[in-house]
Image 1: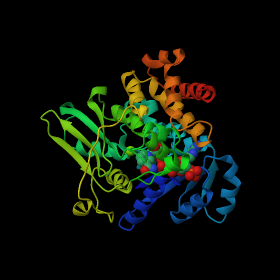
Image 2: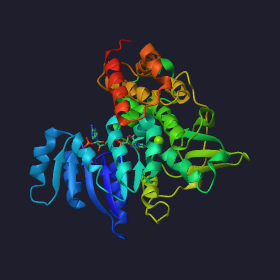
Image 3: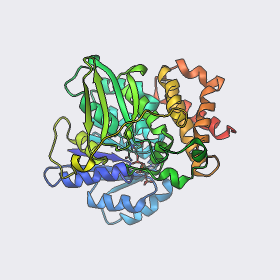
Image 4: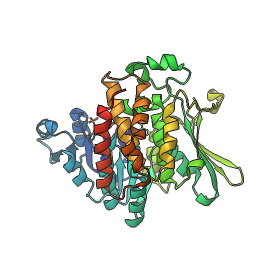
Amino acid sequence: MKVIIFGATGSIGQSALKVIREQRKQEDIQIIAITGNNNVEQLCRDAIEFNVERVVTANDEHLSQLRHNLASYEIKVLSGSEAILETAQIEADWVLSAIIGYNGVPPTLEAIRNSKTVAIANKESLVCAGKIIMDMAEKFHTTILPVDSEHNAIFQCLNGESIKTVRKVTLTASGGPFRNWTLEEMKKATLLEALAHPTWSMGKRISIDSATMFNKALELIEAKYFFHLKTDQLDVIIHPESIIHSMVNFSDNSTIAQLGPHDMKHAIAYTLNYPNRKATTLDEIDFAAQGKLTFEAPDYDRFPALRLAQVVLKSEGGLGAVFNAAKEVALDRFISGEIGFLDMSSLVEEVLMLPEIIGLEHKSPVSLNEVSEVNDLVRRIAKETRL
Ligand code: NDP
Ligand code: MG
């Protein structure tokens, strides 16, 4: 099996390499290309260990260092976003899309055009270009599989079921580090506090998105497109233990849930082996030790991102890219200390309500160019918006 990993140096990318490191003891898995951005050391170590044919850093400034470190190996070394896009044109059996943020969208689309299976962790792809992706996968007969734990769970719950019998899909959310904080406390939340996720260990940006619940907002939009659902079929429940990864309620009011430890390697291994299941050495849940699973209704006042997601879900597709771009800029501005924790959702709300943006509500983008134009426009606006 020929594999390409986009975002190999990240949290998801490294988990995928662990899964493959284990599985390739039993079968022939060739990682032909990996990509990263700033973590040159990790990229080099992985390129050598997995004997890849090509390694790409998105950042041109690291090209000479990468070339120097890999000089004694027969590995093609490239840099820049064009090289990443070109890598997505290589035919592969399994491609993992695990770059963080909007930069992961163009290679995901390109990989769908050229590969047999694309496992999508980059949720921004479905948020910004959901309809385009689903249409492309159908046109190019590409299997797309969700890596995001909630969507992976829903996918597993739907196995053998007809989507027509789905009444409701419920995404579980841990509630993040501020689940029990007051609005006053959240106003003063620091970057360090926002990074302290109670259950999952993830990259920096998605950890903060979990604290605001922008992550769950993005996941609702992602689920809408991936599973062709209507807004009123989508729900969120707070489940602090993060053992149930999501559940599907059917027309006969039977509910199927998928459970597992909070370790993304499970979802990654599932997509790597789909439609089969293969034995892994991953942990199982000790239910007796776990004791109980609890649930709470989400608080839309303290977590406005969930309320804002409804605006996007009800639109015809044009607002996904707006929402994501505004959120990415808000996150940058919070990380740099320019705005406070709660200002992130205020900024996104303000952008969504601008007259020139509201007009996009009925205009579903039909090409990557259109998505990219919206992304650029909104980033410019969100950077300048004063609160
Ligand atoms: P990380 O921040 O840990 O890793 C991001 C990866 O993208 C790294 O390989 C990084 O390179 C690379 N990267 C960063 N900027 C660029 C760029 N401009 N161009 C190309 N590559 C770039 O993120 P995660 O692994 O946490 O998340 C990856 C994706 O998966 C996200 O879309 C996230 O929402 C999704 N996801 C993550 C989950 C998790 O548990 N982490 C769970 C579900 C979904 P480098 O490190 O070398 O700088
Ligand atoms: Mg998730």
